[in-house]
Image (cartoon, rainbow, N blue to C red; front, side):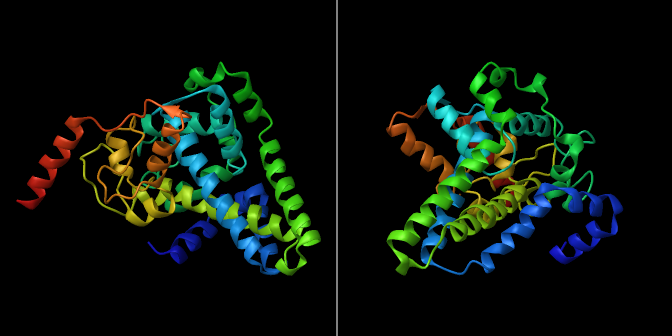
Length: 302
């Protein structure tokens, strides 16, 4: 299904039109256009790249593999850092995020799954459910292991603070560069537009593709009871999250690409943090899963 068809289908639905018109995410998209009015500079491009990479990692390794699946261990300080940085991506807090993701795994592509493109449609799975206020509350019964930390409850309750802090840091950096290095052609507002708004929109859509695209387009290595699929280009953009069929077969693994050719930058970044002592006990696919994968590949070859 092409992007044009998806948008056309979405706009025909009155509820979808109302959601888009009333949601903060809709206004985020409008504000991101400000990047075209604040000019271009290489400093702004660097800010865009850095805030994209850091926040995608905080979401994929932190919100997903750690908070949702507990695929590795860390201390409370780095746990808080991942929570704060991930929340600066404006996808609410780690408790809300993890609770919804655990719900997804329990009911993947079943009627109860709140963002399945199989049950509803691609638009709803990609962004529609996020726009819907019915899913704004936290399912506390699913995250009792996280609720015991007051600092995580604080981040979830005041999830706007990490967003504001990022905007503030970017503005100060841009204003400082403008004052001391005017030849760079940047400013505080330019840094905010490129490093926050434009970057955030990109982070939105690449992470949302895991819900939508990887349940529609790709290959199935394992015969799971859902439509999760492995998709290379989604894995490339999300640092490994595109190996979704692998992940649904064994969600506890901190590594989602099973082989060296399955690009999984988040896992290798976690390995780097492990050497620094910031994370430990990274779980990986057990031998039985590799044997199962080999069996499936032999059958397909035959």
